[in-house]
Image (cartoon, rainbow, N blue to C red; front, side, top):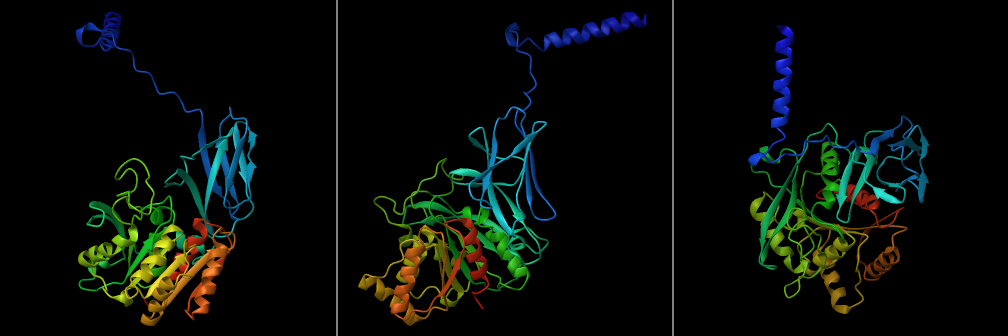
Length: 388
């Protein structure tokens, strides 16, 4: 009897399995198949006790695997054993480092480790920290009070559209009642957008940590999209990056900047005057900062040019604008550039022009090129020097 019941049950299961293969109208359906196992499996990045870093990548079918990054010149080959490829660096100084892996000549993204998106590409990174307060520590997410980042949209009459801006408010802003805060406007460079200072520049982490250590004053940080033809970062509005300093037939980013200030002052508790405002940017954003600060010479007490493009006051009219800034008073005019930056000579030439008219500035020169490493340093340093 038990055998008959078992046979009957198996028959019903088989019939049910067959019935599941038939769709509406009696048409047979293809059976579902398990997804194929991935052929390339990352096994991550290991930061060793001596702060060397071991890259591990599992792919028995690979022929050649390479790693490159800001921590080395060129690239290095990983060595294979039992299908796992490895390479270990020398001990590294505290810093945030981007890296890329290349497998048989094709760059790939390590989906099993920290990844961020720079507009043209996805990039992996890791952070080296030795002690509290070093660069790696300042760039990291630590057990400190955290600020809030909000993405807001404002109406631009200049461009005739709505635009996205990221705004960091410091820890305690929501609970601080009527307290007003200074505002730091932070601009991006070419091939970047309003997300870049957050994702690649670690701006929120830098301010969180510096404020917690008492090294920076609590402040509001405003990160704009400086591409007139692009209302927001790709995936937030449109699917592609659109660069350009001018929206054809309309205006340029500098023309639109007063309406950004008006939006922030109207929606946040700000110190809405010169001593409560700072502005800085790198590369194209440094060029924007240079122009905005001189075209609105009584608006900012603190100005930062990081690897600034287009800084030139040889024209008498432009020189007069800088002299107007000098007359109105600027508490900090910060200039930073890497010694390997392709704009290094242009920056030194601009410094010379400032010397000739007796305009005081603070100059920070660091190793490195036109990359995020120096720009994070300049932000970390300038943030400690403003609103004091």
